Length: 111
Image (tube, rainbow, N blue to C red; front, top):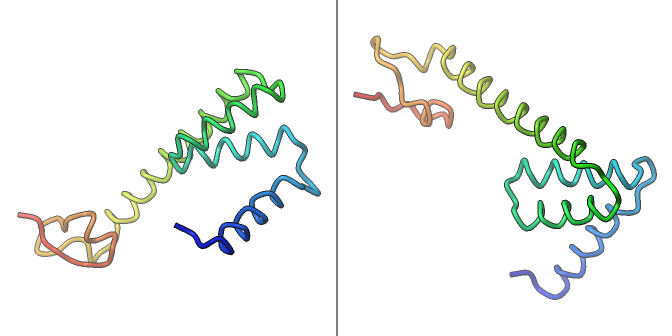
């Protein structure tokens, strides 16, 4: 929970992100929707979907944003795993280190 002063500062900041110098309204809404999807924020996605519909953004455009978010997310998981799998310290005595510990920097041997 934010204090009243913090809430006002946040609202001022958030509103300032709608006053764009370089992005048009459509681009701003699609970027907001992509961020909401990527951060798995259902209320945010609902907000941006409503705004997108009101702005006349087509279903196909929203579908392409969703596809891009999915592709980046899948790519991030693949890159993260490949990075961990190729770190020499993630292999010890021929046994695979638990991936989540290896990724976080802790080394705990599985099995």
